[in-house]
Structures are given as structure tokens and as C-alpha cells.
Image (cartoon, rainbow over all chains, first blue to last red; front, side):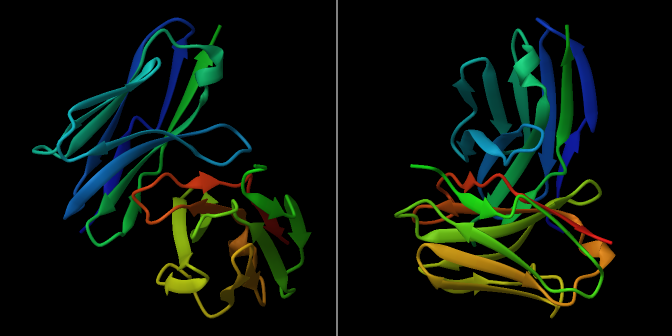
Length: 111
Length: 114
């Protein structure tokens, strides 16, 4: 069964600290994996996309990793800021153009 | 570009009423997607169009839901009759070429069915 599971469901960290969000998937055949950031009351915005051959990709303070063998991805946020408070959604696309969504991790950064 | 435009932003209606949600994609984008988001189920793809033609509507929950795209700059999602369990935020997104490319989401319509 094609599934995308994210952990933790929610996370609270202090401003300036680092954190790592996890995404495990059983989707096959794999095409790509994208991380979205969704601020409260707004639509998701793409942070980064990972293809099969990519292990690491950075976008500012956000670094995504992909292990296609274990079917795991992580999103690492460095030196967190209050504006990082949002939901982070992992989406996996198959070769047949089907999309599978995780339920997201709700991150709260407190001062 | 103004991005994806959705209207209304909020809709409150009574059970049994017809609800129509509207979306204007980014100009030049040839894919349009409708999503539903709830706390319990997260984001769910309902249907998507390519060049105004519905490609995959397997996510549409039941016959009460219908979507149309009469032209490249406008799409509607209609629920008739609406039920309380339809309460959710409905997003429209558009992209170029295929779903490999980044989808740009609208601000969403928060629907409450009483």
C-alpha cells in the first residue's frame, strides 16, 4: 500500500535551535519527493524537491535528505526562527504521476 | 502575477445547500488541481485537469462533488447537496507541464457546513 508517514506530528522548539522532521514512504515506483511549508491560513509553498539520484539539497536554512534505499527523507532546519512556525508536508510522486501526501508535522518555534 | 486566486475565502452554509468554489490559476499554467484539507486526513487530491480536461477524478469523494474547467483561466468545484462532513479547507493549485513541476497553491476556501 502506498503511504507517506511523517513524524513527529508536532514539535515545539526554542528559537535558534535546530530540528529534523522525518518522512517515511512506501510509495512505488518512486519519482520524486517534495517538501512543502504551509503557514497557518495559507496554501502550501514548495521548499525543495528530491529526485532518485539526489541525496541532499539545501534551500537556505532548510536541508532535505533522501535515502531511496530505505525510503526515508528528512528536513533539517538550522537556527530556527519564529517564522519557521508552520506545518511541513512531505509529498511523494510516483512514476505514474500519482501524488501521496503525508499528514504533516506542525512545528512551533517559541522565543 | 497575482498567483492562484480562489473565492470565496470563507463560506458558511447549511446542510443540503449547493456550494460552488472558484479558482483562477496562474496564467500559462496548464495543470489545475483541487485539494481538500482536514485535520484528520491532511491534504487530499480530489481531481486534476490538464489543458482544461479532467485527467484523474479518483479522489472525488462521491457524486455530490463535481468539478469543471470551462476555460484555461477558470475552474469550479461544486458540492450539491452539502453535508457537515464536507467542512474543510479546499485548495486550488496550478502548475506547468506535469506534476513534477512545482504546484502553486491558492489561499484556500474554508468551508463550514452547518
